[in-house]
Image (cartoon, rainbow, N blue to C red):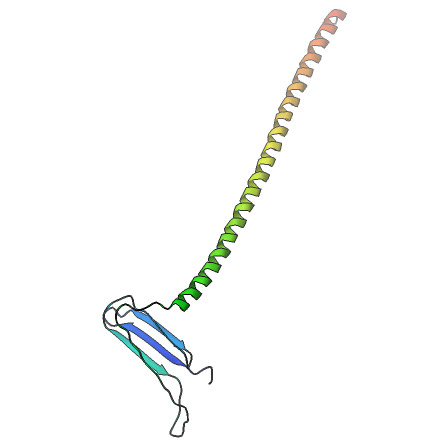
Length: 151
């Protein structure tokens, strides 16, 4: 059959006008839905197959409506869980990668901080040593000039 052909399904809850389902499915196959709201529903099924008096295409449709709690479709649930679990696994892997990157960045930042603190402390000690040498040179010059009688 042509890909453009198919069945359009629309389900609407009558009291709240909430659209439960509005989709286009293939021309053959199975379609299920579950409404989480009790009450009357409007189910509209139509096909886009057109034809005239001489058409050879026929539409055969079986409608089975279950009211009340129904048995879960395990195959659909398992495929949904498999897809969800693979997405969850991918997200967990991304989170683990982000955590590893954060640990690495913390280590790099700690190394940089330690190097900066060491450099700063060395700069302070170098400045103090220069001050001590300048004071010592000044004291020595004052004594030398006093002994020579210049002062």
